[in-house]
Image 1 (cartoon, rainbow over the protein chains, first blue to last red):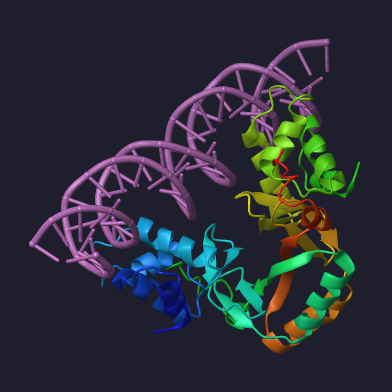
Image 2 (image 1 turned 30 degrees about the vertical axis):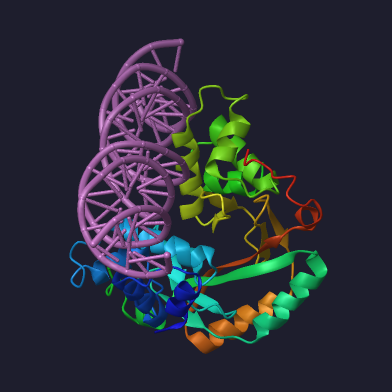
Length: 147
Length: 147
DNA sequence: CCTCCAATGGAAAATTGTTTTCCGAAGCGA
DNA sequence: TCGCTTCGGAAAACAATTTTCCATTGGAGG
């Protein structure tokens, strides 16, 4: 029972096995999965699961502010992130993996932006694109299919 | 004749009126237009212009590294940015406008990320979401349709 | 100036990620 | 248990983007 699941419950939604499973994946994954990835990952466990259910659940979670969307990582699909603390996402332009990266400087940046811009900041998406150390080494190999 | 147009030419592509016009919009716009916005903006001038042409051109420009995509701004469409210098994009979650914002701190951030992560950084997308000063004031008014 | 070939723009079809609709099947309070 | 509401799932609907196909165009070479 993680933060997401608790959130759903507190919002008065039913904790169905599907929802719990989706929350679990989101909470544990380091991959910042897309809807499709979650779907495939759960299919063995819920053979009748439909993509629509995944999307619906993700939409609920997002509209409750429990997860964030990262925008696509070069693979044309929306990636989700359950880590709401300000942090940086590193996207590898070759293998399309997304990892979190902590850099305390960004707190300062956000403060500066908020003060100087006059915007009421609600969230951030800080993404750096590049080659991950692995892909830098492995020439043109190790292209990872988006699961 | 701007940087984009020159880039196209140097790449050996023909400078057709359509391409020049698209480059012009990208170079001058502060709106970070979507393909659709560019299309509508050019329709009066090129009544037979097709969206496919816009997309094709944008794709070429992007693959040449002359423009960047920002990811969607809450309106479900890809926004383009011709400003390649590191900068911050501020997205208003109400009117969906995107503006540039300069904050020199991010140079430091990028350096730190590059050194500590081992990634070969190729680009960045630094987006803050929130209410722009205008929308903060105007209650629920001033919802701007995406042109 | 004319010819030929590769590059181009446009219309329409195809793809693909995402959302909506509809309906039978639970879940839950009374 | 009864009845009302919420759910999940299948399929249809949508919408942004990409591809296909073909007539046109621009330009180099003759």
